[in-house]
Length: 344
Length: 276
Image (cartoon, rainbow over all chains, first blue to last red; front, top):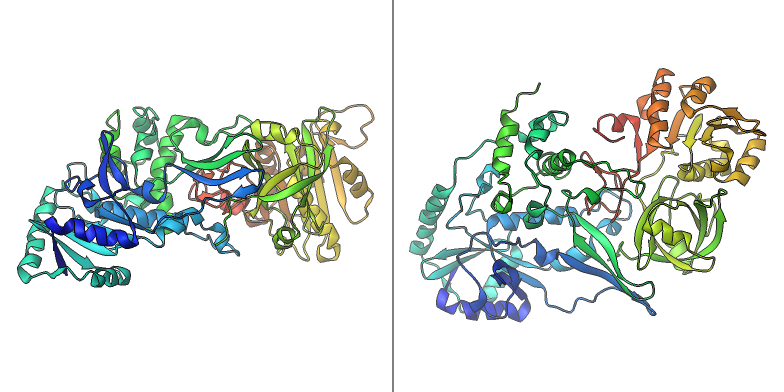
């Protein structure tokens, strides 16, 4: 483990930038989001959850798949450096691993590459992930429900802890270790420095609200398909889709053409299962035409279907959906309701 | 790495209006680049995203059989904005196709067995693919029975081929329309009723495609005849965009129609709520 003085962070970020484009929490208008930064001074260090999730670093809200014109089709050529993301809390780091499961899944098809998403892979596969310990979890946080925690080090390249006037850095993956080894200006962390981590971790965990045991959630929610609980939950929902847009793991998208017949581009855009048009077919038939069906789809996908396919819940407990919901639907309350529900 | 979002350029070779109101048209497409054709390996039951640059894409089952080399056939009903644009196409125009996508009818399992194909309306597309494929390899299969229903005689697709198939000794083709009309010498009655009357051997494998109502009422007939649940297959339709299990909209339970389907057995579907 090495340490870098906060006053020297600019030098370290400059060093990272020699090889990578650095994305970090910063201000975008009145909101906070992970954006490409020019210098370390733009980084906001004390926000736990950016308003917008970091998924947009690798899976932007809109992305050109190709352009078409007289000369045929042209895919956008990526000229940028690989991506490094600084300041990810563990919830967000783990959301990227979930999205990676979807976008790099070959679905057991004979042509393996055909089913992987090249746009995601091009960016994510070469990335360097800095996972920063979360010193002050919010009242909306529930990462611990999923067996993770604010000081979790897994699924990252480099683990970062903000301690007093220094950042402690620990290489986790081989790639992370090798990268840190190249930065010669870092000092070795002392035993005293490392001891402070234990104290910070204990303090961070004390901020977390009471934990709900969700070990039965997958099985229980899977049995509630036909139960009236969905009407009860969806009664309040206005299908605005805000939860799906701020969600760090929602990955549904639309593909749409912009331009005319002879010249234009095909883009993909975030879409939402909360919208009626999401599944509406040209014939008028809509398998999820009513709100209750859409709300059920969202939560079944999060806590049942994804587990079925990938062995993990499609939720990190980041709490962004709790923060933005205009009618105060709290997913934690929903989970508790599901767990307490008596099947009729 | 290959990029599945890029459509393969194809040329419209032939357009055939299937019915008098011209709402159903069949398109024969050929590969613009020979290499694309050589790399395009599909089997009956798979689908493609048909792409009109500037309008978008829509999924259609492949109606041609892999035995018909060099072309891909799609039958398109004029319904929404993309299909509308497809209907404006002229022979010689260039379009895009992504695929082949999805799984297929389990024709390997049909070898040496009797097969019953039940279809309704213009959902006969991938059934045509399967039927043509089996007829090309006729000795591989036992008895082949086809029950095909349409509202009126006009609404059958592939009419010329139906006439040819009707003459074949090695194929039992049963055509039925909803209500009697003059000069119709085949059966009259809905598909479920006709299926009951034909009473196919329950040891056969069955593939059924058609409007949801037809499937809903024909399934009980097949079950009553004692068809095994894992020997009845159908093909589902959903709005699909990416076709590779990423964009999320064609989900039914924890399955995606685009990658886990579109072909499912009744055994699989009965476990998925709201699949029909």
